[in-house]
Length: 127
Image 1 (cartoon, rainbow, N blue to C red):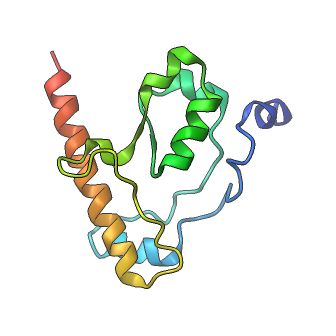
Image 2: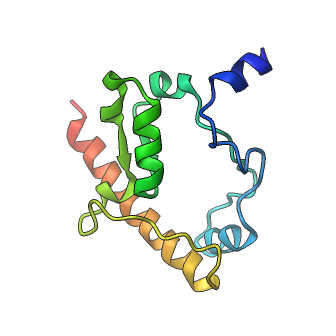
């Protein structure tokens, strides 16, 4: 069953599978009272396009890869994370890996901003 699941996962999306978030990301999140230490990376799998209402990419390269892997009917649920940001729609979240700790703080700022926008959109859609 695990072998079948692996075959159904998108090629090239499992590079960090099983890895915890970067220590610097964990520290930036912890400074905001968020514990992400138990999170683990996993590949995007074909079933995800059916199971989830939102699939969010941090950059255009991953967005295009996800669009190319999804059935046409599922592509509308794939968006850039920053599409939910009031001022940064269409923007990309920068990769902080090679920068210093301030890069991880910046990413946390962007993610929180986008999540505020996503929550506001969900609240507007609520009957």
